[in-house]
Length: 169
Length: 172
Image (cartoon, rainbow over all chains, first blue to last red; front, side):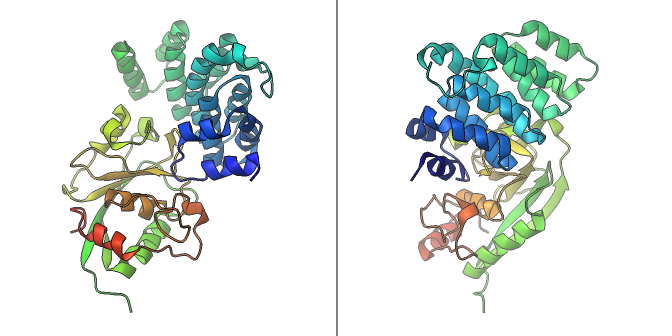
């Protein structure tokens, strides 16, 4: 079975086992995950996006960027959430994977912040919720403050994020 | 001739986001087709729209019963008139990370979450988990790990699975 088919076998599970899939597939899966993030149905694209960031490394950033550009909001939700994983993975792995599939804009914290910054202004509430969580995780405090102060931020979302912020260690 | 109904599973449908790939009614009918062929009735005890936009894309973490997220706990507080042994079905737009459905629930609050782009069989599959069924490999069975690839639909339930379901407190 080739890598693409193996990727699909993992992601077509109703409940993918992401950690096991990442271990089994490794970075060579990232080019296929990017293709899925770009073109697959939204559920499969969302699964591909998350799996890419569990695998981590520079090639994963291209997958998240592709997902962040998708028209379907639930794929952008996956991108916003996965960026938090990616940022953690970047800090640990960037220097170790110079051969990764595609050197990417978002392989630095600055690049990741740019993607998150765009998602913080997304029209969709779900996307903004996960972008806010990722921005908190990345220490983008000024940007989170600005988003929470914005009149366009729904009161229930503001309350939820402010509560989570207070409870962060 | 289907067998007589021995017990029923009572569902309370809580719609945060309308299913996209298959209408909810088709999922219920698909579930009935599988369950009632084995003498387990499927009763829709209530259906309501839940206006909780902040939970439409639900964080489910590792989707394990012992490690529920804050969002799952908040959502599962919405049981309204559901009895202790009734199963609440929460239809959300998506989950993070993405899964078709998730059956992890707190003790005493049997619940499943189904994503809007789930398959025709995901609802029946997730409720199967609540009734005690684990995953299996054969692709002609309800509890197969890939319900999108079910062969020879409707999928099967083996006698040992039916026995376990009938022994669950969540069939009444």
